[in-house]
Image (cartoon, rainbow, N blue to C red):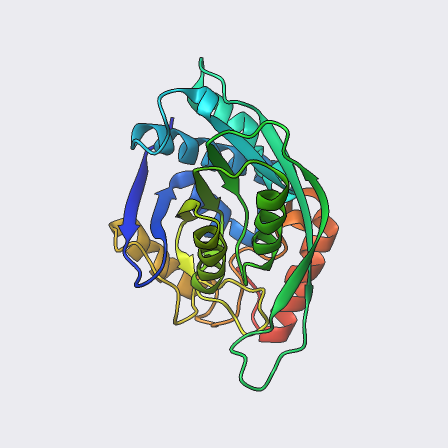
Length: 273
């Protein structure tokens, strides 16, 4: 089992948030980071997610009775991280209530003159919440928050609402967290965010989550300070170079992930080392 650090970040008028750091998260987000693809990325993502789920138990976020806990797998990133197995590994020999599924596809809207970033909306394509429990453990990348906003709205309307959601995000932003927090508050559902590595700034395209963005928030730990220096070199201090790229493609369509990275390198005039 790997060591981890969990650092609380008190952000004004926003839900409770933590930054989780570990060696496996560094491999996902720093080095090799964008070049870690396919099954190698799946294995590392599973390790990082298992570490997060173990931290949930060790730090008192989970109820003692595992039957009061379920996972909600957001397709397709939750599949890449194998969230149900990660939680099951952390809870063993106990067993969670079950797994549920949410398929949501987001799409860009027109960017207005006053918009800080391109806004997105999303369509619900699949929803299965047949094993609900009072505590939902979820995981997804959060940029504008559109995917989970629509997904949670649909889930709350079609299934028993949870008492709380523990939401891990392998790469997430404050704007997205704010919108998801508003949806949960309106439904009287408590939500706690766990950001892997950092709370990333959101680039103007509404998609990229860059280490070098001025809005990126670090944990303030020795590891985070080392990562700040290293990512500044890797990404050449470019404010829009994304830490993760296309998350689904990273796992399941490596050729597409490499194409996206090459296009990004051409756009910013910098090749990742």
